[in-house]
Image 1 (cartoon, rainbow, N blue to C red):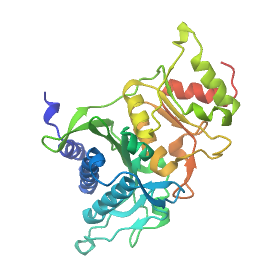
Image 2: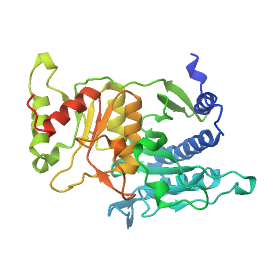
Image 3: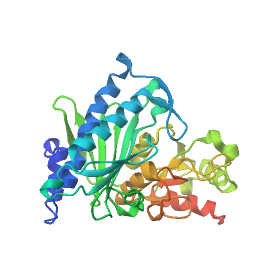
Length: 339
């Protein structure tokens, strides 16, 4: 009953008070993101009733068809960061280059401290099918001392993130975030328009019986991936096999389920995507910060995701993320170890 009235903003402020040196900028920035996601949630929920579904006829920087709702989500998030005055740059999966932000409060001696990365609408290929989609975000502290933001500010290792989170737009809208002190989930109560604490100190089970992967790519995988998938499908009561397959095709939805119940999500490199398909900055890094804070593990198959030094904004990576023991087992298969 107590948690029922703990709003996202109250929770953020309470966490901020644990750090006497905090200026409040990060708290306000997180709330600005939450506000933008409330607006996006409203449009997602009524998308079938207005002329917002379908394609714009354009392609994004990844060469993928752009959905109308993708454009809307990107514009709302970018606009909210601009008027909020706490970000010095925004990097979006939908834009080729980073977008510098004006130092709105520089005349008061306040420097915009943060860089924000967004996947504005993850899983957007599922929009027309009414399948859960989401927004993924991460926040870094700028490394440049003054002036306009630089590419160096935007290309930092995932370990440098100060906060990360995602919002799932499904049967309910839920926001999950971490600022480096645990993972917390908030469900949007439409009757009051507030995110209310519903999942406190989330922890992913160490081991699971669930795997999430697009098995349609089986013929393109390495032997290590094939061997792992065949292994988890075999009958063996002692190791709780076979595993169950759960794959929506919307990363944020698959990840959220695994975070709650345990599981491993895999999007490996293959013959078509030699460097993997998922984006390091917009998808892998923020979800990796979350899963590690929740006691899980995330690698590219051999190296920790958060230790990878990015070289461009739209860099891709293989991703093995989820329950600690499951990810470690998959890594053993990739390394050719005998099980």
